[in-house]
Length: 227
Ligand code: C5P
Image (cartoon, rainbow, N blue to C red; front, side, top):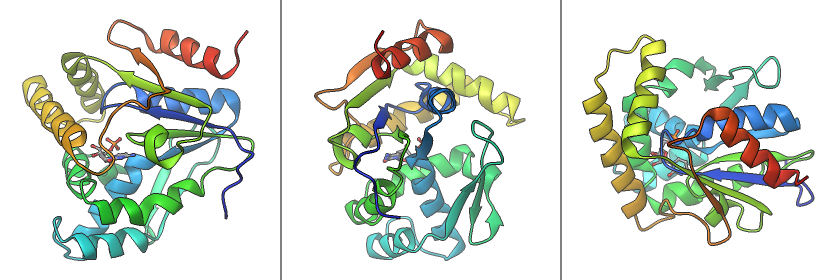
């Protein structure tokens, strides 16, 4: 479906582990808006590439994989965890693996891959509104959106949060390893030429290191619905 320019978009950008995913879920449920999990599209591109034996540095083939992604995000109720389907296969668990995130950040460096996913992301702009979670929502995908948030947190705090999440999912990981991976992924995401991770000039930056989820949610809600 073509995008609806009347639909408001709330962009939530920031590095891995800054709380974007959780805040996006909560705020979308609260507002009754839909969600664009743009990271999932890069993750799906990486998974589909592996299925099709495409190397993670073969830019033009990867762009074709990205353009041809046959995927859907299914949830029974708003706010419920979604099931992610790729060519009829449920890839929800594989999607969230650390290795998938790492592979996603490798394919995300490539401008042709980013270009191939651009319109698919813009098409998520539909009424009553969209919460868009990513790295370049406010800078590239929805530069005209009226609500832009950039969430950050120290690398240590993000590694600890990620550790708790992965432990809950039964993954066996060490904080020190996660910290190294987070720092490497930050460097790749911020250092790349195409749509590097950075706050839009008109974004409001919130450092969540010392805040609870509820406190962050309150701040974001105030932006969308000022009292
Ligand atoms: O947010 P998530 O961890 O799922 O993203 C995985 C990777 O995809 C990120 O590390 C980043 O390299 C890439 N990404 C991106 N632009 C986005 C969303 C994700 O480059 N809008």
